Length: 194
Image 1 (cartoon, rainbow, N blue to C red):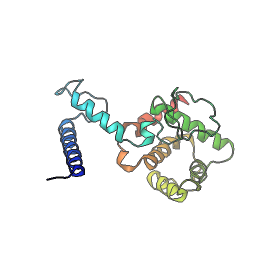
Image 2 (image 1 turned 135 degrees about the vertical axis):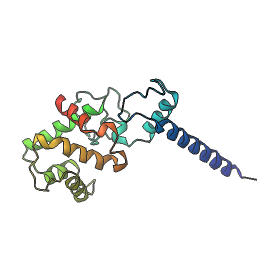
Image 3 (image 1 turned 90 degrees about the horizontal axis):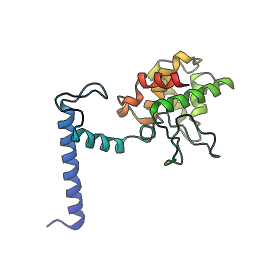
Image 4 (image 1 turned 180 degrees about the vertical axis):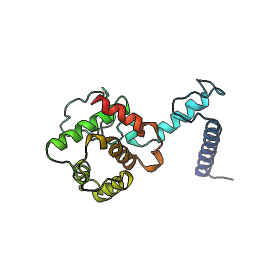
């Protein structure tokens, strides 16, 4: 006989297995481009909606908040960003109505750094992710390796899509690199808003 806690674990295991099968079945013939409808299943496929809801809950904070670079809330509340949510469910990080507005805000942050003379890859990341809260050198190395930019490279506007993608992957994890909110297209749309 299985004890009470054992039954709970068995049920959880079964639920995870069923969800895994649903994910596999729904994604087996899934469209290759986010937002593209698979004609074989139709536009309002219930399984896809359930899987998308589960994946949303599992997504990293930056993706859930439409803030792929994890811009922090200022301690004093600060100004209201264009595209910021009216509600504030996350007291630590900003939340936006779409990831494009998260990238718009990131561009504004980087522009403010550059006006203060913070212009190189290493200086920008050291300011954005200080060593008091992050493993800053690892962050710089990660972004440098992903972009091919040297630590002392002066970052221009044309570098921002690659910089933001590498930073977003570092912030949210490599497993989420293919998420649409981390795409160059999404980043460029956000930069166009700035």
